[in-house]
Amino acid sequence: MFGVLDIPVTPEQIEAWFLRQSALVQILVAVVLPLVVGSVVAWRSRGAWDSNRITHWKELVREYKDRLEGASPADAAKQVEDLRRQVERLGKELAETKQTVAGQHRRRLSEAQREILLRACRDDLKEHASDGAFHFGVFYNSWNAEAGEYAQQLCGVFSQAGMSGVPSATNDVPRKLPGIVIRIKSGYHIPDRAKRLQALFGKAMIGTEIRVLYDHRTPLFKADYVEVVVGRNVDVQRDLEENLEELRAKDAES
Image 1 (cartoon, rainbow, N blue to C red):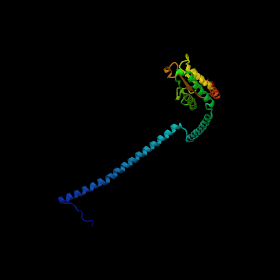
Image 2 (tube, rainbow, N blue to C red):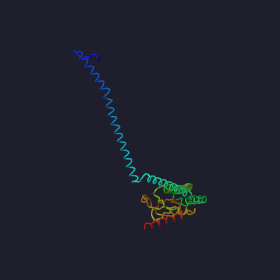
Image 3 (tube, rainbow, N blue to C red):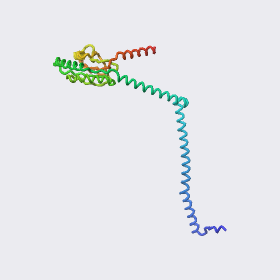
Image 4 (spheres, rainbow, N blue to C red):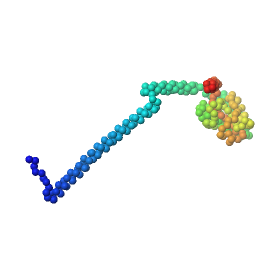
């Protein structure tokens, strides 16, 4: 009914039967086994990915709790809103400060001051022709743009008169140094050139002060060294307010 089962009898038939079975096994190994192995690897990889994802979310939650110090999401939202308002307030204050600084009085040499200072410099060079060239540096704090502008104006007059005065920005000049200072090496000896410079500024109604300013360069100066230091613009009212704030701060500390 089901037909006759072919059973190998002869050695040739037995050998042919084994060859067919061997080919079938090779096909199974080549096709089925990679599918099974791939499925296992994919399953394990997905499991590892899910585990890493869970670990990552746990770390995020822990970091969130640490940063907020146990605050709830509502508390966190309130903190963010408070910070936003602070940033807006600081932005407005910064804009107002910039506007105030821009509106402050900036020193300018008037036409009269330019002409008087130029004539005085030329007359001084003629009077001291035997002393040779008059060289000196003009320095200002690198953070003070207003002082730099004023130094440029002064040096323009000095150069036109034949004197050597090159404006240079430096951090060696104290930020709070007021006005114009004629710097010398030692208070025991005021060089004639310092007195000449002070007289030139005085003729143009520009106030100056002769002072000793120490920094790392001082030991290298010659005894008759002089330089012009352009400090900040003197604002008496602002200085009074700053001094008052310092006094109040000291009172609060005590």
